[in-house]
Structures are given as structure tokens and as C-alpha cells.
Length: 217
Image (tube, rainbow, N blue to C red; front, top):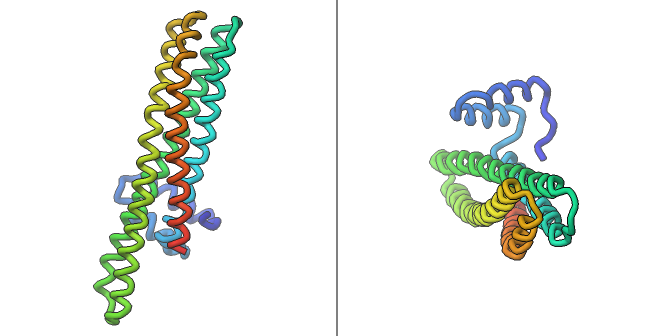
């Protein structure tokens, strides 16, 4: 993770981030002033995205476990059953939102890094070093694109999970009776398959993150 910054720098960066999109360049410049370059930020954001995906994996598994308990429902407080489903949906929604935000942040710094890298190729006077840097840029960009695609695929498989959780939550909310519980029990197999696919795709993206960090280091 990015090392701890002086309070004055943190305040300046926090203020900057409340402004329009153009302030991103000012943010990166300010970070470079304290010795933290776009490559460092990129590594940090890859790790953040991977951590968010790991948290989402865990949350999806918790949601499946909570819904599977409905299959054992034999009477009791229906409102409590609804609240459990609603809680799992809200937590899953928050987890997916964090994943999307982390991927967006990664794409932002990656675009800035590659643009700068490409522009600065023209500044070389040593052609051998220029060619070597150009090749390194191409390889890094290709690795990053594979990582980005893996993350976006995993993100897409989260949507059916959220949709199913939302449907179950709404159905139970407006049909708060034992028959509604029985109807949701039949949805568990479909939800379980969706969660398995999402978890597997997230795991592949996490593995791609680890490989990408190794290439940068």
C-alpha cells in the first residue's frame, strides 16, 4: 500500500479530489512531489481491486448461506426472514459497488500512466533505450488489458447475483407469508449457480492481479 503521507499533503489531495475530473492530473502531480509515481498508485489500486473482489466473494457466499437457511424454515417470524434477505442484498450491493469503484480507479491511473509513458518515448536521445522502453510499454499494456478484461468479466457476473437477490428480497417483502418462503426455496439452485460463476470469475481476476503486479515489480 502507498506509504503514509504528511497531513498537509493528505489535506491538499482530499481538497483536490472534490473538484472536477481535471483535478486528477493535479492529484498525480502532487503524489509525485512526495515520491509516489503513477506506477506506485497503479500497483496500489490493483491490490485494492483484488481485495474488493475477495470481500465480494465472501459476501456472496454469506448470502447463499443465509438464503439456504430458508429451506429449513418451518414457521416463525416472517419479518425476521425478510430482514435477513434484505440485509444480504444490501451488503452484496455495497460489495459490488466497491468492486466497480476500485476497477474504475484502476482504469483512471492506468490511462494516465500509459499516456505519459507513450508521450515520453519521444524524449529519448538513446534509440536503444527508447526501443526497449517502447517494448516494455507494449508488454505492460497488454498484460494490463488482460487484467482489466478479467476484472470486467467478473464484474458482469456479479449483476445476475444482485438481480436474483433483489428479486427474492422484493418478492418476500410484498408476499410476507409461508408460501413466499416456499417459492424462494426453489430459487436457491439458480442463485447458487450464479454465485459459483461470479466467485470463479473473481478468483481468476485476483490471480491475474497477482501476475500483473509481478510484471510491474
